[in-house]
Image (cartoon, rainbow, N blue to C red; front, side):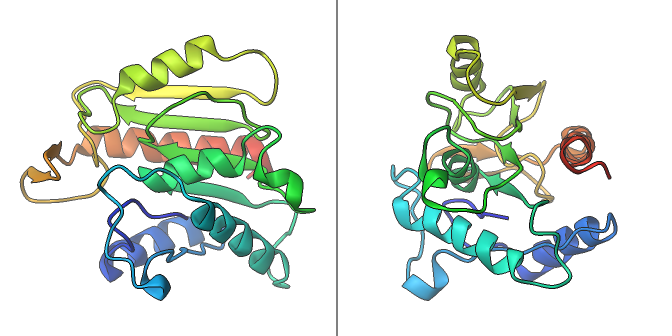
Length: 203
């Protein structure tokens, strides 16, 4: 799991994610790309830098060495900038060509979408009202992609803003963008996530 531009999730959020995934029989490794580097955030225009992509593959290789992990059944899940990193990690003819191990599926929550060509089945989920990572960019990217590579599924949630799946008491503004929790979108996106993993791994 790859965090967004603001860095690592809170402990409560991480514990919730961990409980949700382990309940399904998965191991969850949450990668902290900023803490060890002394980075506070990268929310002022930076994209998926090479260090973050290499972090994703470092996590993949680490998991593959664990006896309790099936090395051929590892997916990458990312949020916002982390979702952009996830898309880069499974990019067709991209960084994955440098490694013997590869991600078998990717789940990207509200990435900023550019050209999309992937080497693993990918689902992208985004809010219709997202003003930070606009849904229209992902729609356009999916519409213009070729048939080369693995399938990409785009799901856009009506009435949902950026950060729709992180519970909060009221909407907030961050770096000039509206962030608001949406329970219906959260539940639908989790169902979509489970379906993507089930399709990739059969469970």
